[in-house]
Length: 565
Image 1 (cartoon, rainbow, N blue to C red):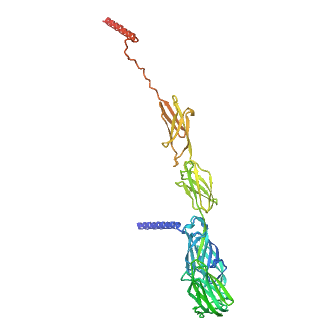
Image 2: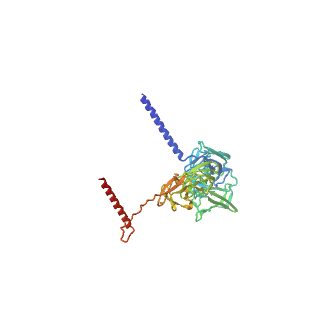
Image 3: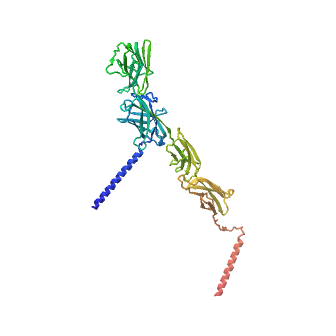
């Protein structure tokens, strides 16, 4: 039973650890991936299709939500894939009939760079626009812009002929949600008075490369002898599609709407003429005695262009004109951001700029007075994160091992045109090594001392003699190598014949080189063994004397010996 309980406990612990590990991995992934960023709507306006801000919109017209947005509360931390959402009211319809579901938001400077991509998800209760940033925003701050969302009123939910408020929400349902509202007067149909000519256009829902045109003629029921309709496309290469031209007599109500069952087609045979370029047509209507007409046709249309049209109705002593324009409502936007550039510091040896220095620590003071540290890497460089524009102060906090601290404060400017580069030098810590020469015995001539660093001849020498009182120094020597380890200096002396050399001391206290005279070998005098010559009297007397002494001595010894007997 106890074993079973232990097994249950172990299994529970294992499952808990598994869940914690999975949770931590999920959090890491979420933290590193795209994030929903803070954003706000800073201005909410309404525009007509000519992109003019208006306070009144006709209830059947397409229009734009004109929204200024800002994602500048995040500093220079925006990354590719970061996004924010805009929830749109259910009293307005957003659909691909009037605008692409997907559209780009471009750099406002006209470079053509796409700074974000937007997607509209339309539903029965409004729509949601998701704005996803491209890598354009990286290293930029104060990112903001404008978005224009093509829309039309949901006439089942919006009252006409009164001002109506609309609210959009950013990041709805999140802790960083914000909202903004705007109002516009929704203008309903008006009773027409004294209207002779009117024309309007709308997009073709089946073919985005076509525009539909409709003309309302003689609503006021005037008499027009010998009436002619002349229609032309202005300033464009678009064409009128002849086969789509239709003219009908109708009866209209006071608002200009056709009364059902009153439309009668007019045969245009012999009445319609077209220009060779299909941009102009003329219809000879004839005498009009109060009849009302409806004229429709289609023309080609290039996405994103403004199509202009001029309509003229003439009769005897009367001319009426109407200028019409068409552009397909297309959501879009633009944005801008200040380039957030970086600071790059390079640390080098003052004596040899080719030597780069690691582990130099700098304190950087931002324009707002806050600080952060930068530490150079193995290549002697360090680059900051993206920084907002402004004036920065840089000062060394910790010098690399073996170098003096550089206490100069540098002023760097980070601008939209670029970041700031600064090369900063450090003086290597130096040392001097003294050498003293002493003699035990007579002083010999000048001596040469060689300097070694970590066992390697540096090529530096000292010459000691009476002129410098047999003392000298190796000066301006690096105390440390590039790794920060203290260099071990030693010396040697060129051999001085007849002297033994002893070196004492060290690089800190100085070296003493003692030369002691070697002892001299004593040579005994050489004896002359030459045989005397005949004429040489010098040695004859010597030899004779010696012989005489020998004879006397021998005689004495012989006599003495005999007496003992």
